[in-house]
Length: 612
Ligand code: M6R
Picture 1 (cartoon, rainbow, N blue to C red):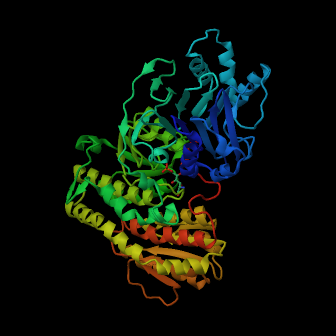
Picture 2 (picture 1 turned 180 degrees about the vertical axis):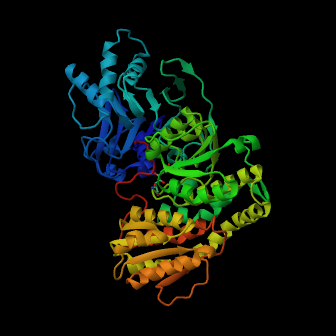
């Protein structure tokens, strides 16, 4: 889950590389480094710590090279340290490599190389790559301009696992090579210069023209040429893609953190998600060509994802089951892929991933596809890996999400899933049309309702200030209120480091109520009038045992024993998580700020989990 950047042009490379790394820090931030070519020598500067620590390194400003590679790390093999940071060199200092991914057979490769006389300086899996390239370079008796390229190709044929690699070589001082397999990598095309990055936003301020790499592609870049090869070095052609996002969408725009900016972007993000798909009363999803017969043939829908995206799936299950009358199973991708799930051609499987690069979600999709399921990806990133694997893809269009803690991705995913559920329901005709029309109208009201919620943040801030020192909290709810509680609890853990649990209110008596004691904080969500009485009884049970209860509700509740009531606008309970999650996001945000934590880059976490 590291971030990598590369530059080749006529400008000094190091500031461009560091600037790119700063934007990729969400992918990992325990060490960073860069390599440039100066005259005939590869210069490396690297260290443990965040990217801006690079500025403190001796000689960093003296790097004059106009070609370079860079890396920000999220440690997998080998603890964060200078030795384990990238770039890594081969023993002869001829090849420098940065790598995002995991080389699964590195033990085997390391033993092979040690036998051949190579030494290793780090505990990483990556260090086998430059040495393996060097080994194949020496084995090759042909001395022509493609010798480095052939060495890279031969080395890659021996690598098992996932990798996005950038390679600099002192034998090829005006070129750089990159390879991609199961780890994200894009190439930005400039004039007389080219860029490489793990994602598009990191280099959006330099170019809007991109090549998206597919697995096993090898690319040789010079200042004015980008040459693509398949794994056997046959030349291939790739289409350029123009990206519409403005560079400012990847900036903080005056907000203190990306997370708060992204929370406030939700009304606009959702307008974009709704876009042309739901216009007036009409739903059209051009990307899908599902007819009534196909939809009638579906015996089960799987919704598979990780983290927040999976929570969006848990909430969306209600709409699909209620409106389409098809059983829906929501599963965690890392569980699904290893449990031999029951899938056949009558199963439709839906994969949700903001980044589109989550390794487990992609693997789950490949598994279902191999068993005959039609696969549909929901992502925020156009051209991301998952969208290239899936049979069909639809996009949330929420704009880049940079903060590690997902916010606008959740709400936009849930909006899109609800529209999808209604689209299926209309074609299937299994539910009263007025019910669908009412939900459509409610969806269209969401952006302005979120604006309303975002105007009233004082109370949430006050509650956060009251409870930020606590060690444990509980989130309770029934139905979709339980679904959103899962997300509220995850947000709190992620950015405030407070332990929290989410429970379906009805489950309390079956065990968790033993954890309730005097003064414990409970956040209860109640937006479904049909479940209100039952939810209130559950709340009473925890109040009786001394809990401080804060309620998020759209209903008129009068209960003097409640600590505070956060009112949100009324909507259909099927989509109420889109409103009730907002105070939860703000609650975690304010607690994290109050504790002085790094909201955008919580410890141990990375934005895209591109390793298993
Ligand atoms: O990019 P994806 O949507 O596939 O990411 C899935 C999870 O890793 C992600 O939602 C994670 O749980 C976030 N940190 C939540 O805030």
